[in-house]
Image (cartoon, rainbow, N blue to C red; front, side, top):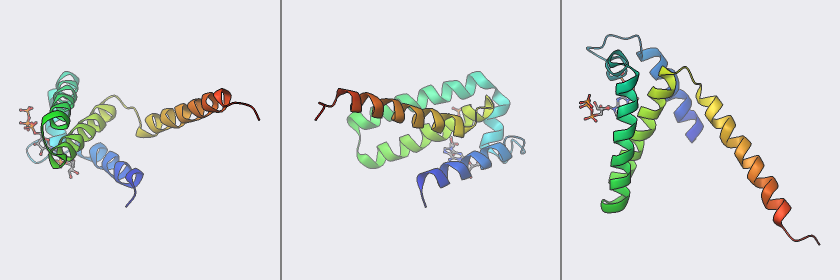
Amino acid sequence: MTAPDTLARLEATIAERRSADPSTSYVARLNAKGLRKIAQKVGEEGTETVIAALVEDKAALVGEAADLIFHLMVLLGAKDVPLADVLAELDRREGVSGIAEKASRPKD
Ligand SMILES: N=c1c2ncn([C@@H]3O[C@H](COP(=O)(O)OP(=O)(O)OP(=O)(O)O)[C@@H](O)[C@H]3O)c2ncn1[C@@H]1O[C@H](COP(=O)(O)O)[C@@H](O)[C@H]1O
């Protein structure tokens, strides 16, 4: 399973669960609490990821990074920003830095 497959599946699940019954769905429950709460969760998970990287083991970092990515995906969904837009921006930057790297290489 490739990383884009996993993220694409998660994006579809989050979109589907947004309108689910909040009593059975964390995604629905979080969306019902509103954008501020979702954004706050992204901030908290970001902090927990930093702490795991600095003072915990790799397994803890993997868990916190998964929490962070999941909550970021919920935030993107709540703002109607497709993951494809974020990936396209990363692709664009890769192209830009590739060009910059080429330009700084000594000419032969
Ligand atoms: N990846 C996740 C995922 N990661 C973390 N979490 C939940 O995120 C919550 C974070 O826990 P916290 O203690 O930080 O937060 P909390 O106490 O629940 O909430 P607050 O007190 O902060 O308001 C936990 O309840 C976790 O279960 C997730 N919940 C769901 N998913 C994915 O989303 C899909 C849909 O989930 P449902 O909406 O629950 O069907 C699932 O199949 C999974 O693929």
